[in-house]
Image 1 (cartoon, rainbow, N blue to C red):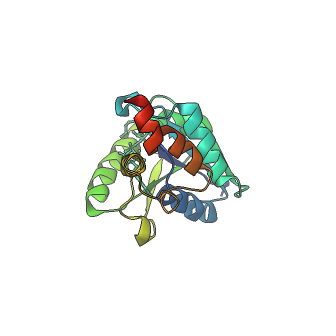
Image 2: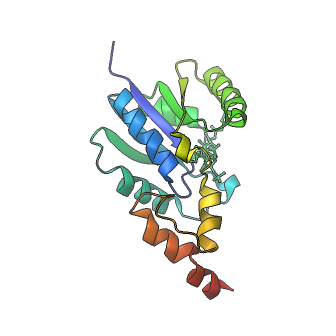
Length: 168
Ligand code: COA
């Protein structure tokens, strides 16, 4: 069997410790993992695609089998172009499972060679999301327990209390 290439797709606006946990788990499971950072204009991301890719790279730099790539358009096209046959997604809640199941079936319909593997993050990260992290940062909450170390200064600079005052 040829070696499996997996991709973990998401918006990563910005990467959180929950995402990082999934990246580390998936990197142990698959010989090659691509973190696929979606342009996702519909979500109106606060960090540019380049910034989001850079932050994921900075957070996962300790993993030799992980690379980070931005993509635009359908995730199945990214998979086809990059030889990806396994899509990794994190599921935090029962609500996530329903949504992910729908996406998994749709993606497999579009590209039958692609299967989705859902991983549960550690319970301490089950409540995390990128928008919650941005909100907590703007309200002055400590962020070191929410995002990987290299993300902390960038997040504070963009969303910290002083930054919020500057943009008022
Ligand atoms: N830890 C912390 N947060 C997590 C998480 C985890 N393990 N897993 C998911 N989340 C959060 C994210 O931070 C995000 O929070 P936010 O809404 O506050 O930003 C939220 O859950 C949604 O997750 P995300 O990873 O951004 O996925 P998404 O559902 O927005 O999907 C793409 C992003 C790019 C993968 C998806 O839109 C896509 O595949 N787009 C391409 C177009 C396409 O092919 N569409 C058809 C799909 S069937």
